[in-house]
Length: 267
Image (cartoon, rainbow, N blue to C red; front, side, top):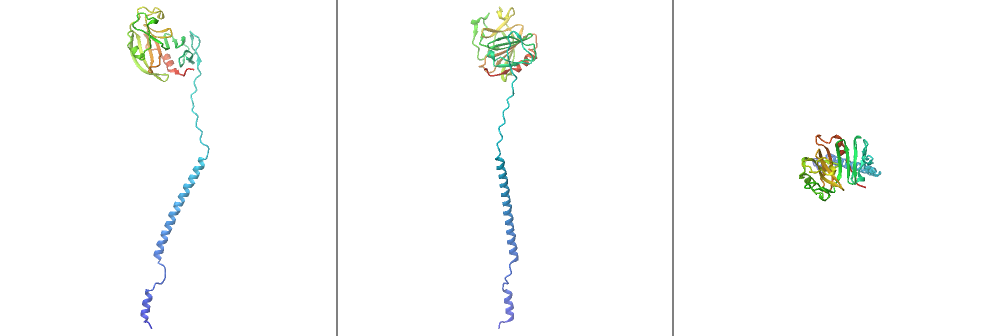
């Protein structure tokens, strides 16, 4: 018969079959953590899918139509009246009929249309005259009394030609913007007038500058002028504002009319 002490000792070494509670708890914690992480990932995926679906549904709507470009409406222009004659106040006139691609506006009724020829528009206001001309030729400064035979081709460097003109007194020059383009402005006076005034000048000493058709552009010795020449040397348009020598300038009305010039395509 086995000894009782041995039987008790062996029973104490036999595994009872009870679970290892610490290990089981650790495994449970790890499982819960994995499930929690998996649930969070799934929720994020669902949320992203919802956002994508909502965005897709929103994109299924009709596209926003392009907004039309609003072009400012131009003030209706009137044809030039017969000349000589007054221009109405607060009106816009179109010089396209003369081959000049410009519109201009008046601020009062003191402007008079003094000449309207192909390539030449002359506006007078008191002792100030504003000419828009497309020169076809210039006159030889060396001629004592220029005739048609003394006409020369309009130089490419018209500003340089005017600056070096022996009969002109060029007092200043600057760059301005007229009708959206850059122009050089020369303030000039008559330095050495022609010995015998031509018929265009009457009895007043003067200098002949350019020519439009058969009409010469003169500058009287009693005047000063702001001669505007486009920086674009292919454009032969010249804007001449002449006013009395004793005046400080052509005045605000002339400046306002020049500022109103709007270049439009010729029909």
